[in-house]
Image (spheres, helix red, strand yellow):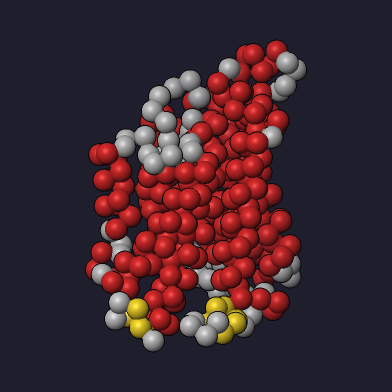
Length: 294
């Protein structure tokens, strides 16, 4: 069977790959949007922190025998803790300065982290096996669906929507948003605003690490895995609207699917289609699809 002259197995296979990529775009851009939306920091270290999540899972498995499921919990905590240290020792000094200072600092930190991992582990990728519970797949008739990839899509969607709900629909999220708008007023209610900001940054970094753990069995664990992805993720955030939580989620999954379709119908443009869309969006709607002009 064919659709627009393309066999359904090929078409849906590419759509699945697009959905997988979209899951990682959404998770990573969500962390970036949380950090920028609430802290006004353009966190260029995000790709390196995604890579660190994958490496922590790899080391937990190979050095301590701790498998995938525990790594989903432990790696975001460890990498998030390193984010807390970065925020307390460096980033908090830049909150009153222009965004460019934060971008340059986090870009420098990213280069240092990647250099350290490249020096220790080289440039070649390290394999990380799929957990035994998620091996194999399901034949849907029109395509074969690997269990692990289905899990990644569902888990990413749940994490993204849960994060949106907490920030946009709960009292904790209201405190967070208020603390960024008027910190002295929120402080007057007895809330420790600096600690809240630090934990928010740690949470955003933890999301990047979680994406890294989930990516480890699909892509090989390597020091370059974050730098290859971070530019695309920034484009996703710009298209969705800087700081827009829902914009990052919808745009992440949507652009993943568009990228997958482009690989089927016009493969030559698959690496550039996201940036073409970004240019068009910036021309027509500079604040992004879901952003608001300030």
